[in-house]
Image (cartoon, rainbow, N blue to C red; front, top):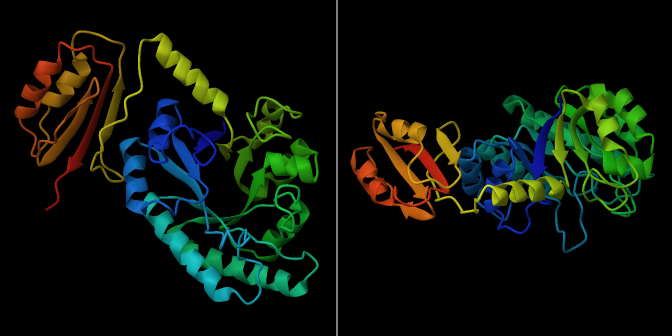
Length: 339
């Protein structure tokens, strides 16, 4: 079965960026993707991932000056230093967030320019070698010229040749069904033929790049060829709406979780319960368990409980006055104290 991730650049935009991680987890996603996370500290993103038990499927390398019209640097001759700086910045975010894939954008260049082609291959090889020691895969993605006129890599055959000519084990194809349909059509056959090269897929409806269950493609049929691959729901707002309707019918309301000091690899638990007049038994039992040198942060019915490190009975005493409230949501983050 494909493993789905929510693209937080496109989804849950009614929330502030960092709250989108919470929304994705509430809708059942176990992984997320962010195109350009660089406006937010890597540590803050890593914290939200850990608090929600999410993994980062993919990030993009910085695209250069977007205001200046740049859409990547890999194929731009004479910009080697800028490209390498962008790789170093992407690496900082990938290492901090645990991202296992990094998409390197080609940029705007003439596809017939031999110098651009040589620059692109050199830069892709550099990026792959740079990330290889951390086990991170490099993605290259053909992008249609209707959305991004003048993009250098706008042909799936050309992308396949780059991957085959550079025998680098961590260089993979990012197959966006939306771009494939606009560039070439023949999506299902393309998936079947290119599957050995694919490291990441993206889905969206065509031609409007909206919910994947509408438009001119039967994406459910095409996606059967992607068994076992990571897949990003670039626009799955219908999933989010369905989850919100389900919460509303259960009498729940969304409460932003209390910030926690969790870091990747530490424990974070979340319990969603219908309104009731007592704490869930399993939560109460968990709270009573001994957690040496740990701190607790919790939110009960929207009332934030201050952290109380180290763990002791004071936490239960703080919760008891709230136990008469309807417990709509209990968020518990367990974090180790710093030495």
